[in-house]
Length: 179
Image 1 (cartoon, rainbow, N blue to C red):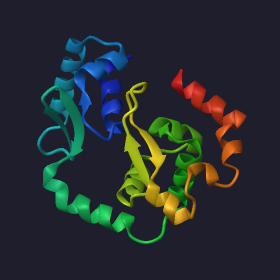
Image 2 (image 1 turned 90 degrees about the vertical axis):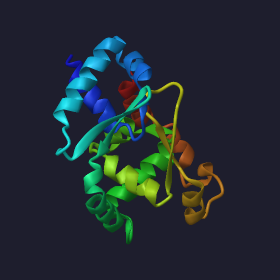
Image 3 (image 1 turned 120 degrees about the horizontal axis):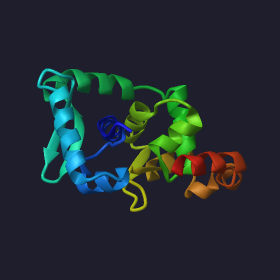
Image 4 (image 1 turned 30 degrees about the vertical axis):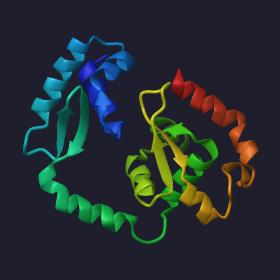
């Protein structure tokens, strides 16, 4: 296992700063090995790259190049205007019926990368992100605003909620993802 590659993937999927100790624990690696890998990634993502590795205290995060802020903001603004796309609706449905759920679990169910979609749903206020003590990655849930838009007061009021929460195939998929 190439720890640098794995660390890069973890930083990519994380939407917030991660404690280096927490990364080391999750990846079952020595802090010194994580530090070495971070140096390698910092060299890979130089000042001219579109991605940067940023450290603040004992945390680290992958971010977009600050020089690209205007273009990134224009792209994001364009992405969140208008009606939800089919992919956004599918992701929102997975979060609604299977939440709290991690991004990799959503991607296992949908079969595609959902990073941008989740970000857009959070910007729209339809999905919230929370830390979970049992997992390295944050979990996603339907927001109160989303419930209000759907005209329900509780997530359990969604049509067929219990059957999807207890769906044998989906439970098996997410259990395999967590192993």
